[in-house]
Length: 473
Image (cartoon, rainbow, N blue to C red):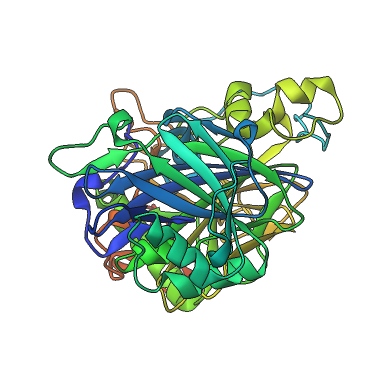
């Protein structure tokens, strides 16, 4: 089976994952955040935000600063195990599958008709008085969770907050003060999580520290993710991948353009080893054609997947990611099996300091389907997306092997695809993860795409997999 196609060994200095806050240190060293995963669970006005961050910098005390809409208390914050993020990322990531054309002369035996399973129906369920008065900064709450010493700050003006952090011996990156200003004007608070390095393991070669994932929840009418402060620690372009879990609901952004990634593209066999390169090239071309947009890569009912690079999320996973912190409603069954109603949405943005002017604001969106092995006209696979009554959209790409055996019947039936013939090994389903760190080359789309990509004016190397062989018969 193709392993999750991670490419950490291909890291380049110009790429980084975005972070919804920034790092500050007690020394004078430069700090970088280069990998963040975010999962948001939304129910009513309740948001549960889970994030995993990696830190690169000196092995001394440092802190994360994150804007939050309300004062958080200890019961709102917890640490998680890191493996849940890898599962969510793999489940929703762009995927590569292999299909073999079945014997054109095979005649399947008659099948009894059984009622088709219906899609799941919508159903509900499941002071310390610190600060410095002259600076206008106040410590609203203070507590410890795992390796984090957390304070929640309020501030009256950006310069005061900037000065307060510096007086507390944190080195604030240049240009931070103007970025504080809009958050303070909105009345937001600042979640400052100071890391006790005695509780963190650093890689001696890379200087990287994998921090315990943090989860916190709050109530707010607005559903948004603060990302502008993350640009402070950015070296160049940043990749942001946001996963959203919500009952019976897909989400997209309200304040930027929205586009779905081109899907159902057949690739040449050599793409098996180059899939991450192909995908980032496809993504970059999509962004160039749709500037200042956020790309939807996945929107699928969480109770299933097809093909599946890993198993769907379990009821325990949903509890970990926030089901225990959102209001319960409806049938008791749904509280124990939330996958029956939850939709997993994956949104992907890539930007730099000049292209991102606002934080991401999310809005509910209609269900979509696409990227499945469905024929639209009896001959062609569906490409792109279309609205439907439930969500089944994915970034799926296929390598197809035309039938290579004898054809000895009068009326062969081509175009039936499935598993490998006896004696042939299948690589299974692979996921392209950590794509922010992949070498980027837009020409790879032309070199590796067999079928056309109409949205990007890519002709494709063949009109349809297997056509060349069939014309020779």
